[in-house]
Structure formats: structure tokens, C-alpha cells
Image 1 (cartoon, helix red, strand yellow):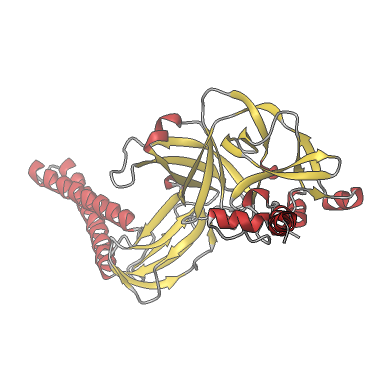
Image 2 (cartoon, rainbow, N blue to C red):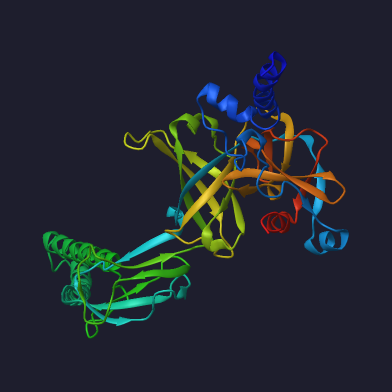
Length: 391
């Protein structure tokens, strides 16, 4: 073998190895050097993955019109500061009356049912009373004695003119008449207190009547029931005005004042609201809850509010007003728990945009982050856009 053939035989394998390393085996050789497994080509790095789901919603003009989608530009407006509170409805203490038994006795008749509307003076129930009968008998006896004493005094007065009686006898007769008059006045006052001034000895009963006009909201009475003077048997309330007691946290008490306007709404009011004004602000903070009470007297002509009902309220408090970026409440919707609006980025193309809000008034939110002044936001038809986004 010549020197040239020997070199040729040594160079050819080296050349093949170099070619393999350069063209097809570089990655494998790199792995061998680094001592690592080759990466799985089916795995895409997170930084290069595409966002999941659509990021914009397209509504053709016809569909947009049918869905009632309307947009407004973001603008600065002056909002009134407000505080959200919660509480419950109660009777207005000036428009409620508890009717008690007034005397000891047994109920003989009941004339009203719970829920009945009554006027002042309408009969509610009657009570038969033995003590009333005794008082009526005493009254009749005193009146008969008074008539006799007056007749006796008249006879003595005529005899006195003839000097047939002494002055002492005449004075005693006059004193007797005065005593009986006092007894009768006392009995009459007791009868009025019992409500039995219209009763007779044959029917010693008391008629309890409505002291105010309103509705019978409670009836704890039935025929044959024995009651005492301290028992409350019927409650009548005028529900044309109610009292709403709201709970306010200690930090907000000083922001609320008598006369502040209050908007009240509840679950049973079918999205309707009523308005009232703050009548009083509590002077005491409850130790357990760190809250005080704000009382609001609310006109209730349609009976939308019922005593015992739970309500939410929005108090328009007095304070500095600021011009801020704001949008109508109807424009904001929750997407995955985040307040979101739909911004029209191109004609008929809408982009969901998470936002941050702060104070609000009755109709608008203040926006602190997420949109810019002048951007057009959907204020109506937002649920249609949400449906399209989630398809």
C-alpha cells in the first residue's frame, strides 16, 4: 500500500463524520455534549401560545340594530357622592295604634279581620265585663240617691223659709248632694276610661273602636277569649308612610345629615325604587357591629314597602363634587367576576375591556382604569355582546 492510499483511507471516514455532524447529527451531538434530552417539538413554549377564545365581537348592522346596541363616548361628568346602606322597614310610630283590652273581661264579638281597612271610630270588638257591670250599677245607685237628696234639699229649703228647720239640717242636705255629685263624676270618668260610657246595666259591654284610620295588621283576639287591661289585642297602622331604619358604619356616620335624599329599593319591589329623606341620624354606635342607625321617613302610597321587609338604600350625601370619567351603570357587566365594558374599537367591532370603578351616583360609575376619554362604549344591548363573546 502506497503512502497516498493510506492517507485516503484515513481521511474518508473523518470526512463522513464531519458531514454527518454538520447536516444531520448536529442536534444529537449537541445533546451528547450537553448531556440533555432533545426537546419535544410538539410542545410550544408558553410565551409563544395564542390567547384562548375571541378577543373581539363583531355585530353586523342588522344584528346590532335588533339587539339594541347603543354606544356613547366616555366623557367627564360631575357625580354626586353617595353611600350604599342596608336596613329594614318598620311602622312609622306616629301612624300606628295598639288597641288594648282596657278592662278585664271576655270578648263577646270581633268585627274585623287581619288586613281589613278601617276608619276612625269603626268598631273592632266588644268585651263583656263583670267589673263594668258593678260600676254601672254603682252609677245608677248614685244617680238615684242624688235625685232623692236633691228633692230632700228642696223640701228643707222651703221649710227653712218658714223657719221650721235649722240651718245645720239644711247644710247637711247640701253636703249630701255635693258628695253624690262627686261620686257620679268619679264613676263617669272611670266609665270613660273603660270605654263603657255607652253601656247599660243590662248589657255591661265595652266596644273598642279604631283610634286611627288604617289597616288591621295584627289581631290577637277571638270570641270567648279572656283579656286583661294590659293586653294588646289589635294593631292598626296607616301604611301610607313608613319608617326605614338603615345601618351605617362608624366611618360614614359623619357624612350623613338630616335632609339628605335617599333612594330605596328591595328584592320584592320589581326593580322599582322609592325616595325619602333622612329624618334622624343615630347618636350611639353599637359596640358589637360598630354601626349606627339612620332613620328615613318614606311616603308609601302604593304600599311597595312593608314592615319587616329588607331593603338596600343609596344616600346622596353632601360633599365636594368632582368632574370624573364616568359611564352609565347599564354599560358595566361582570365577566369572570371582573367589571367589564365593551369598547367599539372599529365600526361594529367591540372589545371587552376590564375596568376599575370607584364612587358612583344613582345612574353612573366613576372609572379609574381601563378606558380613555373619548372611547366609545356600549351602554345598551350589553348582554347581547356578552352572549356573542361566549358563543
